Length: 241
Image (tube, rainbow, N blue to C red; front, side, top):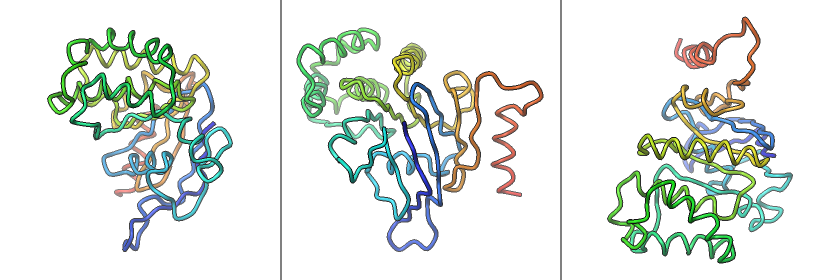
């Protein structure tokens, strides 16, 4: 479903790459967690997949399609929840939701079917007609989550999605992530919290110093296999040894 092969990225003027020969593959109908310490390259990897940054070399494809093949179709295949919540401050929440639905050419009936249950589940009814600039971090996150699902994306990408959410909203998001997987879609999210990955993921990819250092199944681990915590600490501590 998602394939990242030997991707290299560096910012202009930098000698060392931020992302160095990173490869990753995520199958359809699964949840994959990008796990790593702060500054490991998780957000940069996500931005490369989204096409927000351009790789120096390597290949990224979604459903067998690269950004160069068909930029519009590629981007319509992805829903994205950023960690920065750079949404339109001067719009109301309702205006923002409609703007995103318009951008993805979603019908009125479809957007109502998607948004109405989420509005109730995330308890944001009273915020719909307020300007986004008045929202808290957590409320912005909720609207970003809703907007990212309006076009039912085959690939749903979330960058540190639990940050700023209360317990009830976190529970809703976890359920929605599982439901998205059950429809045969793919979920990719970043986190530095192992417990969240253990709850949600089918696989994890440990990102460290711009490389995918290890991938592992989360469910049905064989007896005697190292725990995910052991694997993670070995990868990270090895680099600091």
